Image 1 (cartoon, rainbow, N blue to C red):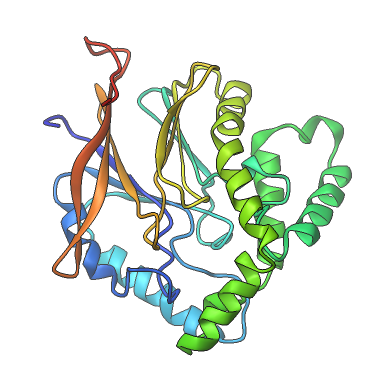
Image 2: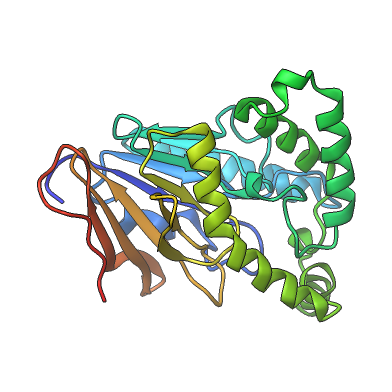
Length: 283
């Protein structure tokens, strides 16, 4: 990709034991090439927790690292970092590409999580309190989702002890086993939900880029919207990077080599409206 491009990453989860990002400097190879960087939510966990000094250190680490990045960087919020930025969405390529973290797809933010029922009640109450005209405005809904997310405390994310972390991760995410089916259901539903969100709120967009579910993938939907999920920097699913230039959208795997993260092989490439050629996916 020879033209100046924007590179989008998501779900670093820096500071969480499950993340492969132990130092932000590990991302350095991903900064080689793009004219602009976008971090699409869940960069770290800024919610209240039992170790506020840990959260403060992570914030400082991110601030210091961003000061070393010699290109414009846009930080969008996610459900784990609802107050990290005032920005919840981004439009690229003259509106052809819509970027948002993706938790807005679910009325309980994390259908698989321990807090799903409590979140659903808070969101329902928050929507009822909004003026009717605001309930379907994306900016108002995202602001509500961020207020609700900020009320949900950190749990396993702030646990420093390895065994305790594993037990709490299981309790928060995959136990009882029924939650595994909720994860699979969310993975199955997310592409269609993302396409519907795009058609409703960004009807001119051809692409929506999300993260959140930690399932990387590219889906061409019946709605005519290409849904791209960048996955995460947490095992086992891994992640993608998406490069958006004036003429193309390029999806690449993120690979780890010698303790650093690099852009890897191409997963998909699409021509934008002002470029010749047809969208294409590998077989």
